[in-house]
Image (cartoon, rainbow, N blue to C red; front, side):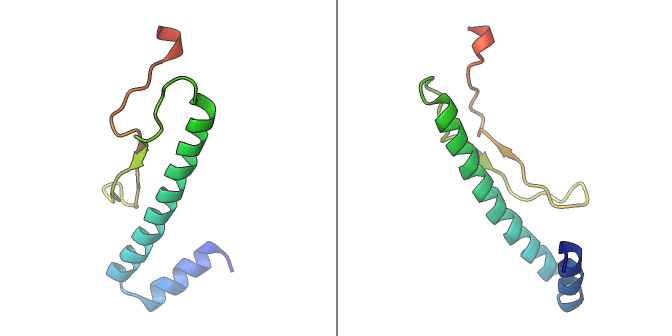
Length: 85
């Protein structure tokens, strides 16, 4: 059973509002995991440069494009670019 089959089965069983909550919960959990992975990689790659990975975060779910999107960013912190030093 593929992911499309799972989504179709869930859509048949639940209302659109309930499906939106299910999708939002799944995306939020995935975004949390991705943020932790990015932090881990930043800490490993830039540990000696003073760059802080703690600013990495994700926003809320946006559906303005017609499908759910979560943006992951650095919470407004700007890291130094080596080529500009």
